[in-house]
Length: 640
Image (cartoon, rainbow, N blue to C red; front, side, top):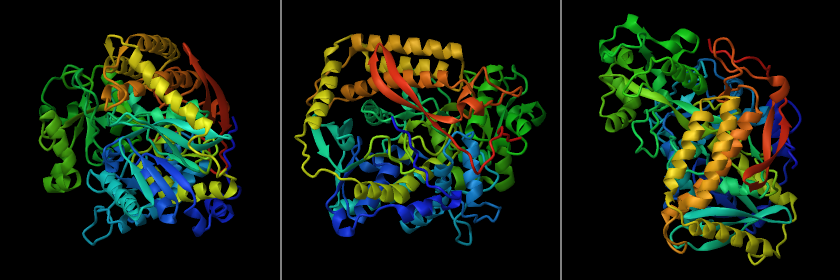
């Protein structure tokens, strides 16, 4: 496996512009001769499909939902970062870059992270031009608020619906191209395999989720924008349909899977309330602008939170991190919430929650102001919990939210398989070991609007793509047969245990032993337990129905089968990385104050795994891309 990052030479601020000057172009009259497949219609996939079609390429777009605008990007709430410095508080592109690479605990590629910061301002201009209704100040300028890991206000927002509004902007751009005939839209199609011919990605195999038909699709390049794999934990803030199948099937065709152990734990989620839950609900990080996080000083204090006076409250983030307070990065806030709950200071029926209190903000600014900022979030919380956050504190607890790992890509966002590009959360490239809030939307739109359209064109212009290849090629035959055999195998098990039971058991293993805090002993136990669970799955899972029609059980069975393989790789990756960094906290490697302790001498690299088969135990070979830091100084993170 070749892990050449293809980073341009020269000063950091000039790398992307230099690269744009050097890449090869496809003439307008030639673009219409080329087909490009885009898998996923979220912010990364939607913006990529719209941009490529606008340029003149013939785009085939695929999503598992009944509408492209149901992609999980709509769930993002709090905002999108950009270095426009509208509040005049000292922000610059460099500061956004530095905050992002520091927030990721120095485990991301410098060049990719800097380019993300560079593109951020153009993203806001693009969104405004599309009519995205960002919040505005009284004078008409776009408003900003703060997010964790930064000491400036750089987050643009549309109340608590930022992802949805940005998604609608990308969706309307995409649907315009559908109307123009440049995008061929295929909803309710799930990608089941990647087709490689002469070592290049030349197409995909899908299953029509309504008819059950296995179909073949051919193109000159494939863009994978299928999101993250947080649902390996069963309970997460992700939509229930979110899965790893498209990316995992590409991995099984040779694409390196990078840093799978890096999982974002979000600190402000509505706590688990019972075994009946199939997902969790996120409360936006933006709430930490005005909400204060605390627990009672006395473990046995069972008074109503409004009856507990200031002197009996422990504002643990404000006390431990005075420089950032409640706006520390997500990994720091999550670990500290777990620590106080582990010490018996948690609140609520389960003791696995802390308070997020808006009383001071309401008294200071007035209820109407707080409602203008967060009204729909407060309504969502009250609808779910039956408690009014204007009158008493919210209860929150950490939950799995985002995955920083994903398929390995170079500077062009191309995987180690030529012609397979990976955008958004499906790749590993920009966030390192921890993602700062409001950066996911930024990355998805940066990749789709401002990177993929250039780099895919460069690939097409630079490669001789055989025009004689058809969907009757033996590679398509083999991939289609492989997809059907996998489906038949699932249906033929005929066991007596449901898919949901297996998924829930996997999630419990992952949360307990590959979650907020990990240890060598726990990870070894997790690997063995996942292997045993996977063996039981293939001997005892019950998948009712048939493959030749709409079958939700079959859909989920295929996805859980992939999670059972990915889960083992996540635990193996976590075990091999004998250090703590960002959201990857190894209990053996902490400072005296409980902070993550990196080992830059031995682990300053991207861990990319090459699939070599499953035979009881997952067979993977580790490859390393050394991370080089020429422009920032590696040092212990501090938010004190």
